[in-house]
Length: 265
Image (cartoon, rainbow, N blue to C red; front, side, top):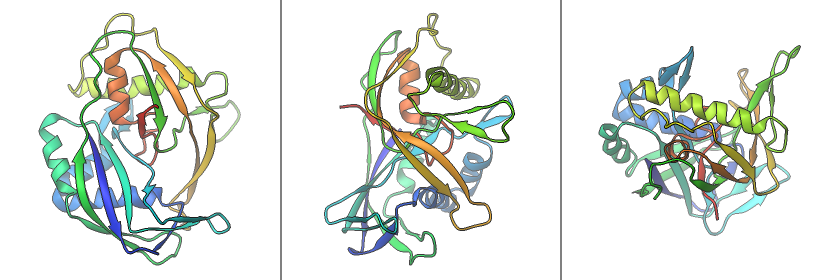
């Protein structure tokens, strides 16, 4: 399920370009006000698999409306009066109406890096129609990132994971391993069927020059971390059920700040 949110705010408001974590926190808070148990489950439990917990939702970058101005010198943006945001959830059908209704006419504030909070009002919520792909084997779909995709791997002798560019050898394998693990967590929860025979035939093809983006999580706090993702256009070949799933659950690192995708041009 995908929701298209139209947000209103006071024109001329200034926002840090490193706003992603704060928006994900606002989403959890809105869900918590409506159903604290569901919000806590989504944040802390989700869909477990082999000691990991997958949340299976993703948030796009803001799409700025008319009148915005980006200030590269200090990493901020002056906003016009209207912005757009995509929320993408892979949830049980019984939960979809609840989630869609929760966000209507909500207000929330986003304050980043010590700046004055920007007050947003959700003017409208539209539920996007599902992708028109028949369930089967071997479809090819083009996608584009709406928020950076993060893929990482462990390197022997290093304390930290290494973030991968989609141009690196081995990226395709890591990409599909991640997506298949997410899918398996949903299958074990009874949300999706097992993939059909022949699912090993999966391919990733990069269609544009990737743009690196460093995102700071909990910026300015002792818990601050930095995560590197990439924006790009790409093509996937594989089972339609898996492509449907990735489109809604998000691709790459299972953190709602990353991995929201749209249909490619």
